Length: 422
Image (cartoon, rainbow, N blue to C red; front, side, top):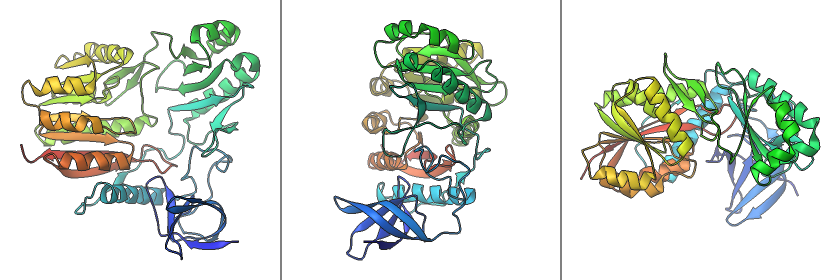
């Protein structure tokens, strides 16, 4: 039986929400606000209904033809059917929705999302999966079914070329390719070779030995590294002006490097405007934000728990003469607790994984930095953690979005919190 829904708004996660006639709530991934859809198949969940198949009865004016032949099969991009200006508005609304519903914030000022310089062809890295037959592709939406794409609309042109070459080389050696289950391809601006970081299905050195012929062939086209095998393959990624940061293949790097530079620029400007002189960066990775803040004249400490990332960050600081900075190998919670017993702190910078930084709320409150700059790729965990910090003496000053992921519902946000009570 077909049921018609009217989509009211998008909710965090990107699905369209409808209020059903029986009082329940329905969600339809891919539907847009103010659209009417005919739901042809659905799944009843606890407390809501999920549309699994539907057709558009009345489309929103923001709906456009997706610039990708694989958009229906591939699970990577869920906003390619949305006009770009509308994407920015919807992401700002998603940020506000999370902050109001999860965070309980009721007096938010305007929230804007800064556009990406490139709307397509922006990704500097992609993660692909390799099946037991050696085929390369992305997962279909909400499944582990492999979709073997021949081109990616959101990959930088040089990365798309590298992906095509990688697929072809593995297709020529499917038995050897099956030794690996995943690969991350990266193209840093100005790098001599694209990088490919392979994850083996078994012990990496043994898998590498069995697949030696394939790895030797790949090495003619790529800088090849294996997860679990140490390497000296850090690549320098350029920041503002002559600045740069060395990033090893195991360390996190943003997918949209141009927007990453914009976020770093906004962070440094915000720190200067607030009169910050000292900082600590938690979840520092290879020191992406630490380099920018030190170059802006602050003094600070980067804390990271991965050895290879710490070594790369120290290299970046040493080569660029950023002597006001220190990079510490250690756990963020323990290091922050120790930092709380030393001199006063102006600024704490967080860029945690998608799961957020709830474990740092209490140590941060005890350390009492005057300001917290929280960079997040998940509006819900950002709202949750901001609410917890406000309960411990902070006020949410501002939130600004950055379109790190055009063509998807995901949005990067930079939130500033100010200490209001001891």
